[in-house]
Length: 461
Image (cartoon, rainbow, N blue to C red; front, side, top):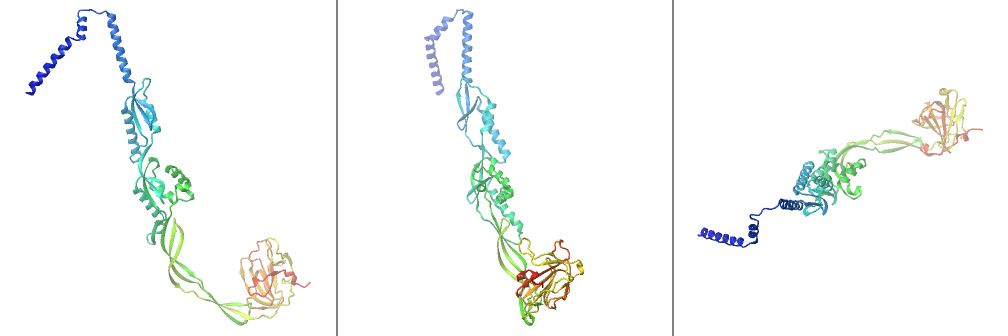
């Protein structure tokens, strides 16, 4: 039924259109042209008019362009928007592959279709402009030190890797056997960020530079520029301090003590060692705290004696020595000789005695300038072989001897041979074989603490 009614409706519509056409101006114009022959020029005009219309339509349609804008700034126009979209897709795909992370456009790129009567497309120039102006970004995490942004990394996993590298760098110097604790002084965290893929750093270089020292400032500056911070270098890249606590055990020396015995059988300026002192040993354990490998604290936690020290026993005289010396000296070099260096206290270096030279050289005998007691003999780097005599209220010193012929505790008389002239000790090789002779006034038990005087004052005129 529906099909039959539809056909009836269609037939009725066709009849109405036919009636309208029979009464239309278009039918009258067609009947007028029937049987008429047009001149060739009229055909030419009609053809020209048709071509002009077609060309106009083509020009109008070809004057529509897609205007390419980056952040609202026009950079060019193209007919095919697919060229621009394909270029941007290829660019992000290649950069994602190059950086190993997904990237996207930071700026907004829009294409608006507009009519430009005098415009001309240049796809190559548009692509070059996009390549220069487009900035690519990626989702990353910003490593922070005490909540201060430092450098971006790919993920929070890499932040944990930086922390492990920082900790292991100094822990490996200790060894697992003695390492008690490792921690970072500063708080290292992460915050989401969107940055240029070129700014994203590798965990290894970040750990190396955050530990930093003065030898890698150039590398720190490079990383700072990659991080893109506008802060000062030391602010943009704060140094992270890694603390380690380790247990160490070392052997230390226990100093020996000295005890004294007193005897009235020796003069008070004399002494002798009865028992030699010997240092002991102990094993001491410490907890050592280091910061970036440098020790900052040490705490003793245990101690064990390995060897007890032996006390040094010294016997010292208490008897007052008689006034053995006369105070008027005999010349201390047999056969005379001459003074090669005099007594002087001014200038540098000073000279606290006199140097006496003799042509007999090492065969020259050295004599006691006055009667007294030998309180000390020995050798040291400055004096070489030396002898110190005590005369009751002053001391005389004889240095650079080739050989000493008396010992501590001996009593000597005025003019007695006590040594042979030599060139031992620090004589600098300038004065050769000679005697260094000095006088010290006073009765202090440590003879070298008494003041020196010019020895020439003690010789008879």
